[in-house]
Amino acid sequence: MKKYICEFIGTFTLVLVACGVAVVTNANIVATSLAFGLVIVAMAYSIGNISGCHINPAVSLGMLLTKKMTTKDFLCYVASQFLGAIAGSAVLGLLLGSYSSLGANSYGQSGQLATSYGVAILVEVILTFIFVLAILGVTSKKENKQVSGVVIGLSLMLVHLLGISFTGTSVNPARSFAPALLQGGIALSQVWVFILAPLLGSILASMIYNYLLKEK
Image (cartoon, rainbow, N blue to C red; front, side, top):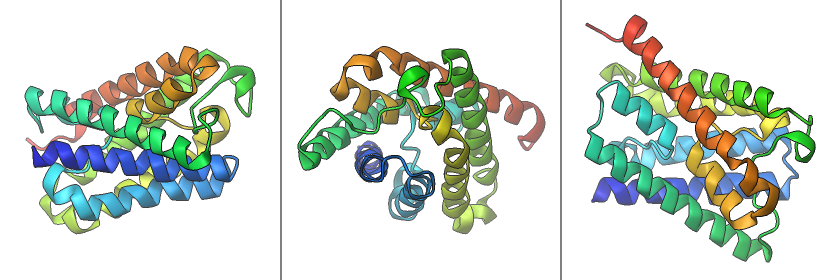
């Protein structure tokens, strides 16, 4: 149970703080990227020794497909992540006094570059692939334990630096679903992209990891 509570807390913090920074800075690329990366670092060194600090269904899927977690834990992790994200978005809306803008991901005319849904899917698949592959690699050796939180945080920061202008950067279905659910409208109609594409990116990263990188 402690693992699931940690995943709830971690995802709650990620959505509240990082999406909050995105909203109050009008999605400033540097500030938002730093916020997402630093939250991961903070959570990795506070709850990582208990749950592994996935706080992302795409990461948990990668761990499941590389046999680093059980199906039961995967399902409980994902449920905890979605609930934590929804709670984070709810508190963010309360602090802002409005649920009209909670940092939801977007494409088309509601995005910065008017990205098509096809490009949005491709961007999210590629960025999630990079992010999950980095996590699978850095966590594969015990000697990396002391630096893994920093590496993962920097990896998330990296993919945000590119992705924000295209989609706002998801790479995390829970992070995308929660603000879209509470905002409604266009954000909710587009959220399928930010659930499907990160999962596809995670599957691809897991396949490549299993084939090329996994220790025998």
